[in-house]
Amino acid sequence: MEGVSIPDPEAPEDELVGEVIEILSMMGLHSEVVKRSPFDAISLETYSRMLFLGVVEDMSRAARAAAIKSICDVLLQTPLVVSERDTDKETIGGCPVIPVGLLRATRDQDDLIRTIEKRAAGGHS
Image (tube, rainbow, N blue to C red; front, side, top):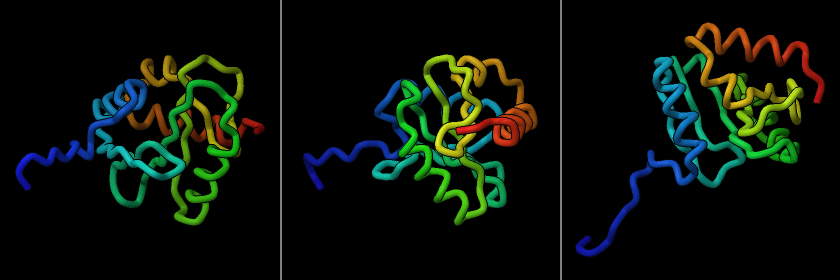
């Protein structure tokens, strides 16, 4: 339609979400922004391994993280919360938490998955 501008569905509205998606893409994970859901993006290597991502500024979003965890439990997939700020917490709402600084330092997909699994196993929400 003439005069109607449709926004790019892959363009994140938040700079931090955009940075997280860019980092994951450099690791070889295909990532898509998701709006109107408790999570911000879905990243996948294959359809058998998907990450449902929530990006938060602070750790006060436990209800949102719990919603992401519930969806992942049903789909048998991996939840992940990326925090803008450094935190000692390893999980929030049952989801592994990785500060964006640690994500920036992560070398590859295997390193990321090991970090997620370690935090999921050792953390307490």
